[in-house]
Length: 550
Image (cartoon, rainbow, N blue to C red; front, side, top):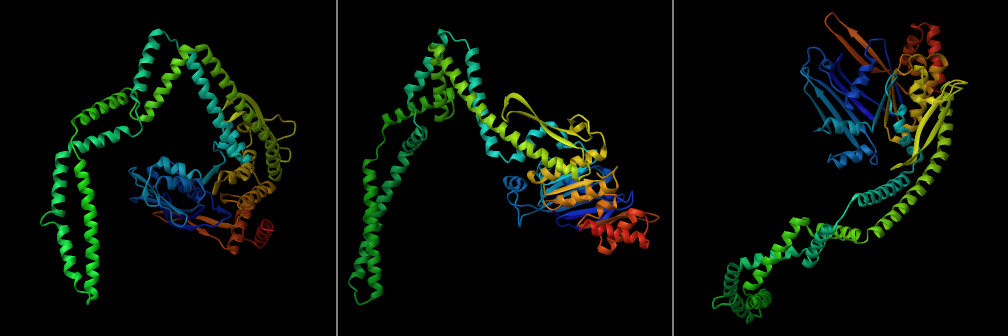
């Protein structure tokens, strides 16, 4: 969730630092005071485009910074870790700065990042909704994904995807075989290629071993000379080993001194260790020889292997894969009819496996869709839409990586009205309530940490407005909710209330934002509802506030 927001020199805002908590927060103020500036600032943190006019007039740079907390299992946390960002205490800091000449930068945890990556991270954290937004919930291409999120059947869906891709791969191989036309020349060339690979018998790691052996032969003169000198230094007339032996003997005859006897024992051990190492090196020197025939054999073998790698692939595994492909193509020519029958049988078996899993998924979707329909209708009824109907409409398709279902959400708001796609919902107030009801269900499933509503209560009043406020309050139990509103019935339901005020002088206009205490909230609710702070207005506001939190 968003814990802190700092905004400096942004449009009408000089310098504002706000702290936020869980639950629902409402932002109110007079028209033109700049209520939506706060939402615009958060939208910029989510990757929205910056315009030079957003920098406060006369200032060199605007700064917007947000501090967010997120659970370790959140997709945003995973994305940041995979991109190499360090995350301390499950906190991320997002910052955007921009100047009047259009220069801007984006940072995550004080490290510069791209706008596309910033959008990818923040889209999983924040959902900003205004009344006329073209929301993903309305777009039928996302409805199947939303239903599957409601199912929580991730492994089931992954299995369908795997089975479909298997079926598609086998089908592609069959279609390619049907289209290919081979002749005797093809068979002769393929047989030559196969024999060339088979006759070589290239082993894993063989080229590296041969190159290492050749390297030793090429350095034979240098290494043999170094070894001879080493042996001479160890065991020659004035070598190290005889010297150590004599040194040990000098101490052997001083048993009265414990320190000297310890020295004797260690020198004696060193002597035998040096003697053993000398013998090992001596034996190796005895069998060292330069074998010109072996060098020629190595060079010839390396030439053969490298030639095969150039023709068929850069390593043994690629070479073996090519060998298998050639064998299959030869088999296809020699036994075309049998191959096609086998491939058709494999295709049919793969399709049946996919179809069986897709049918299971369909049955699960249909069952859970009924449950989802009931939940959405309940939400809409609570939002003063008593005649609303919501249906998850299924259409069977030939099949894809998601199964054999196409899904679209249909809605009817009034009695006698036919079900229709969500985009065609006519009334702005009805659409807002539909979106709010859907988000109450889907927000938690998508892992969204903060939901922002920018005056989606436009066009409603009275009990409908209060119902919208209570629904946002309910949504605030499971996620952080920000709401810009002009209705007292909505603002009264918030856990936190912020007042946006515009202050003007002869030379400047500034927007300020402050959180209200309980007494100040009652006064603000009275002003919103009746433009008065009379005793009756305050009494009504207090009653509304108590009702909202009963």
